[in-house]
Length: 131
Image 1 (cartoon, rainbow, N blue to C red):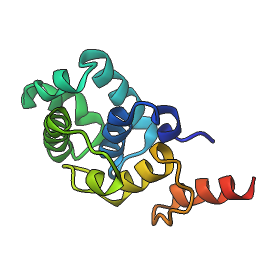
Image 2 (image 1 turned 180 degrees about the vertical axis):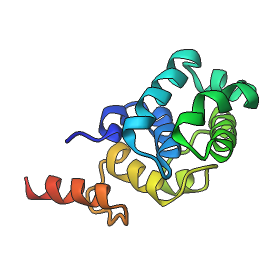
Image 3 (image 1 turned 60 degrees about the vertical axis):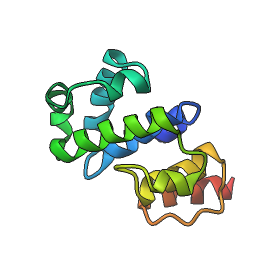
Image 4 (image 1 turned 120 degrees about the vertical axis):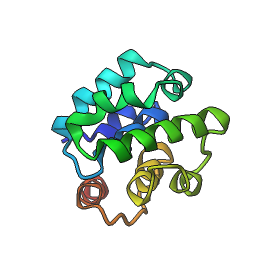
């Protein structure tokens, strides 16, 4: 099973947007929403400029849309000003916590010594370490 982070590791901005959308959601509902966002606003700058009222309608299918929309817009604005350089900086970004930070460590930094609390990331690393 390939995780979305693996697919997007060369595009860390979009990987982290995926992490924000995944909060209390399933990839099955997040994938089409992320695809729509990427198609309509293909750059961090374009996404940062989207009106809240427009983006919330796109984010609605994944739930917690008010919070996620706000986090996405604030995240995109911060990314445009100064993208994170490491997992610690990711953790400080709007909407990004341990899951996003661990995803950055595992997939962007290729650090397999991470001890995530997320069960899917844990399983992924256990499988990777056993190969």
